[in-house]
Amino acid sequence: MDRQQISRLAHAHRPIAAPLGDGSVARLLERALGGQESGRVLDLGCGEGAWLLRALAARPGWHAVGVDVDAAALTRARETAAALGVVRRIGLHHRDAREFTDRERFDLVLCVGATHAFDGLLPTLAAAGELLAPGGRLLVGEGFWERAPSPAALDGLGAAPEDFADLATTTDRVLADGWTPVDAHVSTVREWDDYEFAWTGSLAEWALDHPEHPDAATAREAADHHRAGWLHGYRGTLGFVTYLLRRD
Image (cartoon, rainbow, N blue to C red; front, side, top):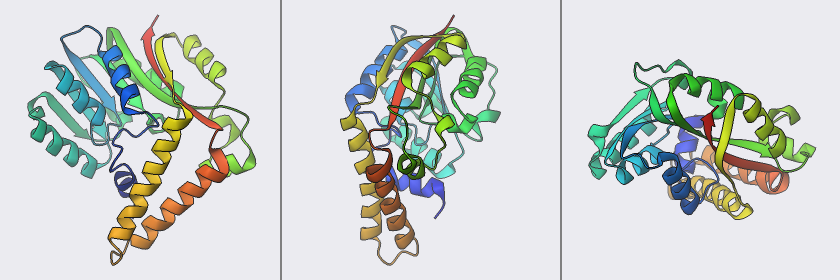
């Protein structure tokens, strides 16, 4: 079972691949779309297109583009778009987000929980900036250290101390790169707990429901390993901030 399949199963009941509650997603998206009745939105690392489908449902005058390396997730996004009646307003591209280009710029670019595709926050800002129209907005979600990480936290994440900074330093880096946060949301403990229990629970439940599947044991092991790494490691240590940014 590859990493993409594990992620699809783990997000079966939480298609927003980040520790954000439904109300937080709705508020951030409404703020990001602003007062524009029409526009173009791009999601770099869109998965099953949850952000884009919400945007299209809320704003009939908008068009969307999604980019992801997971072909199966894009197929599901296309099917959901067809069921919602918005398939004509969305384009989905199976490719590395770092290689995506477009002749037209976008009014809103999203990369929430997918900055790893660009090897970090600042490279993500640079890539998104090349695709953003003048006056456009960027919604980007990134991890940060709530407190200094312990060895158990680093082991649970498979991370190094330098992979993240604290919230103040992370924000300072965004500002120094020429971006201004016009809004933001710091995920709460409850949002983190809901997300992690849904992630591990969905994956474990799939294994329970498919005991004869050759990947059942692998899925259960992945769920157990992730849960232990979170509860005994990085819970309360890794934070998540979603910035709404505009360029200076």
